[in-house]
Structure formats: C-alpha cells, structure tokens
Figure 1: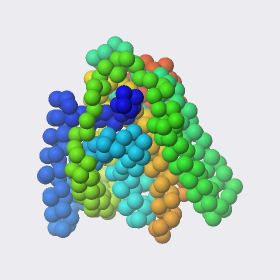
Figure 2: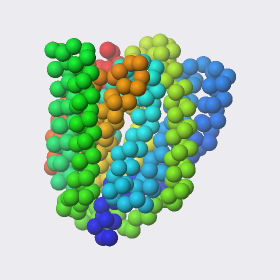
Figure 3: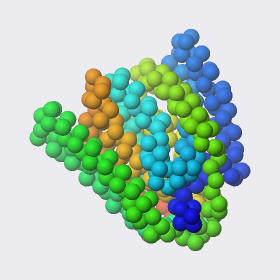
Figure 4: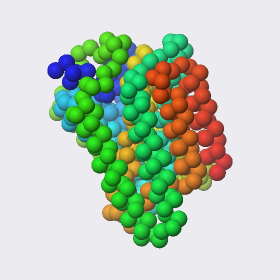
Length: 376
C-alpha cells in the first residue's frame, strides 16, 4: 500500500484541491463554466459575431477542461495506479483531442498539426519556463526526480526526433498512398510504445526509481476529490459540453483568422494549444510555486509525451473515418521548433535541478518561436 500511495504522485493534487491557490483557481474555473456554457449556447443559436463567439468558446473550454481534469484524477486515484495510468492516457488531453476531431471533420488538417506542435512547445517551453521562473523567484534551487528526467529525455527524443522526423523524410520519396500507410504504421507503433511506457512505470518498475524525500513529505495520504460516480457524471457532462462548444469554436477559426490577419498555423500553434491546456498550465505553475517540482515536470513533460505518442497518432487513426486523412507529416518549421524545444528542455532538466534563469531561457525560446509563427 505504501508503494502504491507514493506512485500516485503522477495524479497528486494537480488541480490544487487541498490548497488555497488551488481553491481559488477552482472557483474561477467554476464561474467560467456557470457563465460561459449557457452564454455560448445562446450565442450559437442567435449567431453572434464570430470574434465574440471565439472568445466565449475559448474561455468556456478552459473552465470545462479543469473539471475534466479533476474528474479524471479522482477516477485515477480510485482505480489504482495501473488503471489510473490508462485513464490519464485516455482523458489527460481530452479537450484538445475533441477540438482536433472537429477540426479534422471540417478539413482543417493544418490547424490540427499546428495545434499538436503548439502543445508540445507550449508544454516544454511556456509551461516549463513559467513554472521554473515563478518557482525560482521563491526558491534559489528547485530539485526534481533525476531518474524521471533522464527517462523522459529518451522518450522525448523517440517521440519527436525519431517518430516525427522519419515520416517527413520518407514521404519525400513516397506517393500519397504509401505515405498514408507509413503514417498509420508509425501511429500504431507509437501508441503501443506509449502504453508499454505506462506498463513499465506503473507495473514492472513501480517504485524502483523513488522520488526524493522532500517530495515524499509533501504527498501525505491521498484521497480522491470526488467519488467515482460523481467523477464519472462530471466527466460525462463536461465532455458533452466540450464537444458541443468545440464544434462551434472550429467554425469561428476562418472568420477570426481573416479579421486579425492570422494564419491557420498561428491559430493552431498558439491559440488552440493554449486553450486546450490552460487549466493544466495553471496547475503546473502553482505546483512550482509550492516547490512541488516533480509534479510540475510530470505535467509539462508527461503531457508533452502524451500529446506526441498518444493523441497525435490516435488522431491519425481517427482521421480514417473522415473524408480528409491526416498524415503524421509536419511542416519543416513545425519540426524544427519541436526538435529545438526538446533538446533545450533536455539540456536544462537532465540534471534534476533548475532555477529562475533557466525558466527565463525557456520562455525566451517560446517567444522567439511565437514571433516566427506569427510572421509566417
């Protein structure tokens, strides 16, 4: 039981339900839902201006995402580490998955690929950078599990450098049909490896690489925030609401892009990626401020791996059901920024130690890349 309790660090208080900062965040997200959902529904029926609906839908989805996350974490704790790992793999990035499915349905393949790119660089550079910076202002040095950091480094190189670069290079010599087969094959392999990684961490090597004593002291006895039935009800209701609002949000992309002069690439990389992960981003920063760095790193890097190795390949397979297939082939600028983000993150986190200046470096890299995508 002791080992099992300690292994729940992956799901511990990610939405801050046992601290003042977390309670404040939860209240804010609840207000966003109470106001946002009915107003968004009314606005869609009355055909309000696309820009207004874009803002309303984005804000509402942020609130719903927080509740989906809290429900998933409660279910993960109740189910135990093995089933909990699968639940987190399935629902951890459910909001972005839902938005992407509707975007694929609308034929916005470039937006989906860009949102995957944005999620990866956003988690690694924006979330990681802000977390290290904010935490570093309070603590001169912050430590996290060095074994986890080194394990994640290898996973990041496999997920981004190997699995994403390979399809682009080979697609240059392949026809469209063969490139499609290649994308499907790689997607299946990536999902299998991701599930194998969960099995490795939660079953065969559970407790082998222990966290530091400082982190263990913070854990305490972990109990689910909600009962299983309440969590299932919240998760089901929030998923339905996100599905409805996401479909409306996707329809605003084109008019909003024309109004602001944005490209599909910029909307996907910056806007959709931030909206889909905003609640999780806030939680990572809050955990860093409380010196819960192993949890922070798990949110930033663990979520990145989930996007790259589970969500992206799953979207490729799901796109088979739609008229427009989404190949696992990113543009050269997208690949370059993801690779740079991966190697910069590895260089900074591989020692299991960080500070505010390293956070500033990650943030600076994100700003540079954001400017580039804005001008493309």
